[in-house]
Image (cartoon, rainbow, N blue to C red):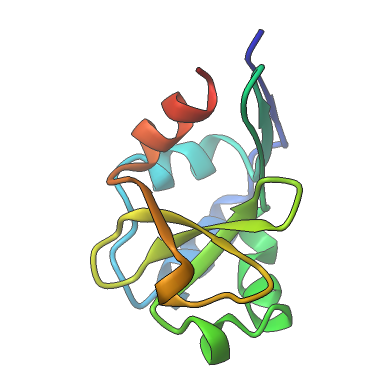
Length: 123
């Protein structure tokens, strides 16, 4: 059975601040999801995702040195193991890539919209 365990909604100012800091286009459905939930845990029989709180994403991207190892991407969560879920800045597409060995070459395309990404996780 698929479940979404949502965090409490972020403050409107938190969403506004996040959107002001982003220098790329977010995938369709991202803002709507994160306006209603400041992160979530999604699980099904075959999938798991820990979607980071909007308020923590920039710091976590710094902590994981994303700008150094995979500057084409912005990470927004993980599979709870060794893989990150990331947005490709030039296309807004969603990819999965390893935290160790993080690079464009290791990134695997998942979806072109955030809505489709969530639907994929719930299957």
